[in-house]
Length: 227
Image (cartoon, rainbow, N blue to C red):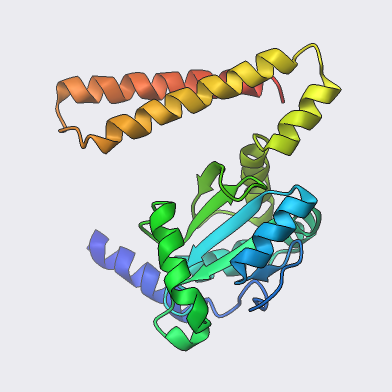
């Protein structure tokens, strides 16, 4: 019964969520506007020193993607924030291949592999260099434009430009702030490496994972001191 209810919910989303965030440009890039032109977006992000939000989506079949378009990206609070603070890229994997320019199809698959995307929607936040992954966000039934703005801000605050701005405004805390960021990155890298070994689910490995979780929480708490 529970599985049927979940299926019914997703099916309902795919039928009901007809509202999209906005028209997606096929060429060129503008801050706060969705585009499929990844190269133009990278250039713009570098020029403006802004983070990128990569939206890995299935625009014509993914119920959760449509829900986020309707509940989050169509909202004025998100649009107003993104206009001056983000470069937005749509990487679409539709059932209808004609929705995406032919030149982008193989490139989208390469980016999916590069960033380890395994489901839709997945939102990858990149620094302005187009290479440094600042974080990854997901969909949620209760997410709003305001809550997603907060999530994005909390992720993008680790961008090079944000770190520089904070350090210049708080020179007495700059060294400690950078050290806290490096500690967080170290724990995350160790966790990814450990997960990459495909550890078996047993008592010993459960304890290792629990220890990683505690270290991650401690690192996050330390960084919160600098907000």
